[in-house]
Structures are given as C-alpha cells and as structure tokens.
Image 1 (tube, rainbow, N blue to C red):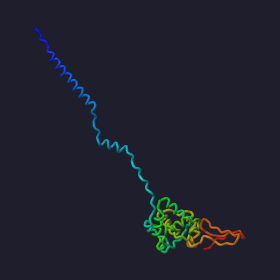
Image 2 (image 1 turned 60 degrees about the vertical axis):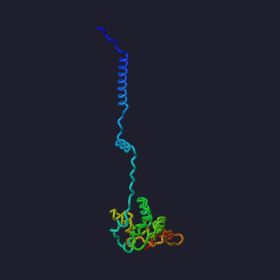
Image 3 (image 1 turned 90 degrees about the vertical axis):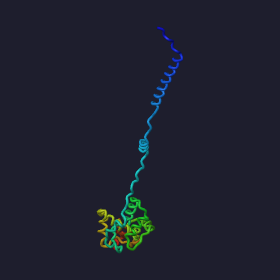
Length: 220
C-alpha cells in the first residue's frame, strides 16, 4: 500500500488554528478571574452610615416652674402683698442664686415670673441686681425682690410637697407674733458708745450693753 505524503501547508494551517483556539480559551479564563462583582449601592450606603459618627444628643436643661404653674397655690395675704415672711433676706438671696444657676434662667425672665405673682408692685432687673449684691440677714430687706422671691419659693415648696426646713420652722416661731420678718427695717440699730449692736442668723437685732453685760433684743 502506498501512503500519500501530507501537505505541509495543511499541517501549518491546522497548527495555526489549534494555537488560536488555545489562546482564546486562555483569554476567556483570564477575564473570568479578573472580573469582580459590582458593590451594591445599598451596602455602600450602609457601610458609610455605620462608619459616620452619630451626633451627640443635647442634654436638656432643667426647667423651673412658671407663675402660671404656681397660680393654684394661694398664700394668706397674697392678694394685697402682705404674706408673712419667715426667711431672712440672706436665705431668699441664696435661693434665687441657686435657682438661677440650676435652671440657667436669665434674671430678666425670672423677674417677669415674679411680676406675675405681684398684684401691684412691679419687679425690675436692676432691683434684682441690687438685692443679689446685698449681704447679711437684713441686707436689702426693703427691696421688693425679697418679698416676691419668698412668695415664689414658698409656693414652689408647697407645690413640690417639700417639708419646711428646721430654720424655716424656727423662723415662724420667732416672727409669727410680729407678722413675719419686717421688710421696712433699716438693718441697723443705734447704741451708745461702748455698746455693740448685733444681728443674728434669724434676722433679730439687738444691743449688747457694756454696762450690764447683757443683750437686749429689739422689739418690733
């Protein structure tokens, strides 16, 4: 049997076709490996949201009662501004300062609330400034802020259901017969040379006599 010779041109063509097919397969495999799935917009947004810092919540400031909140509480003598006062000017001064510091209420706003409790007298900020700058149990006792402040905090105490302090109870025992702490007291007493005037923590005024060695309490 006679074998026919292979045509070299045919062999070359077959080789080229085989190489081309191999390169095509390699190219497709490479594309599959390099191709990555796209990120969803939802996950990206979620990731961004979780990484961003959350705004801090603002701490609410404590709010004090308004005159309207205290309007249902009536004190004897309130209608003509004659409520007996059983605290010293120093006590009320301390209450006002603590209240303004705790609630962050401006003095102008607090003065307006005090005005709502006063049927006749009007409270001005300059009066409050003078009262708060005064010192001592009798300091600025004639100032209307003393009376209005006492009425405000006495109403607040009753509304909050708080008991009287020990000093508040003692003040009532001392001053009840006099109708409360006098608001028109000048805060000083006259005495002769050698004697010593004094004012105690309850607002009582008196004179220590050098001659007798005794103290005499001023009568109102």
